[in-house]
Amino acid sequence: MAASEKEAALAAVPTDSPTIFDKIIKKEIPSTVVYEDDKVLAFRDINPQAPTHILIIPKVKDGLTGLAKAEERHIEILGYLLYIAKVVAKQEGLGDGFRIVINDGPNGCQSVYHLHLHLLGGRQMNWPPG
Ligand code: 5GP
Image 1 (cartoon, helix red, strand yellow):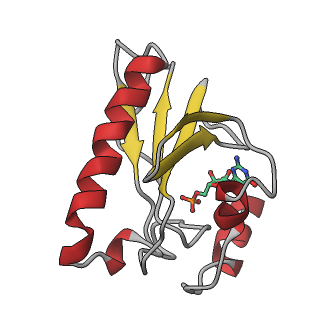
Image 2 (spheres, rainbow, N blue to C red; image 1 turned 90 degrees about the horizontal axis):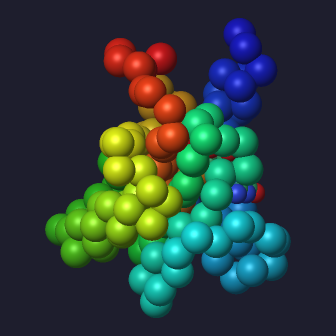
């Protein structure tokens, strides 16, 4: 098992506890913020998987530990996160294309249980993903 897989397995138990992202939202730990408004925060991933790798998160988790926990009340913020992904992609100059990823749960290799979109770009993506 690769180190990254072990890490994911260890973090595989979904929880509604605060995560590192709460500290990033509160600016208690530093991050490189590329977009912020009253509803969402977008910042560079600490372990980038592409030349551009940005995480886009809701500032209020409201039970959205992952996409699997989405309920009807989340429809507006889910749509807004996708819209902001497009805004940030444009801001980052990803005119040739980009990829949005949402890892969900243990099989999806989710490691932080605060819903987030990965915005990846700046290189040719492959399909199928690993
Ligand atoms: P997941 O594996 O849950 O889909 O994605 C979590 C992402 O958060 C990973 O890509 C990981 O590199 C990133 N990440 C974890 N801790 C930090 C941190 O402290 N700062 C930043 N900027 N990214 C982080």
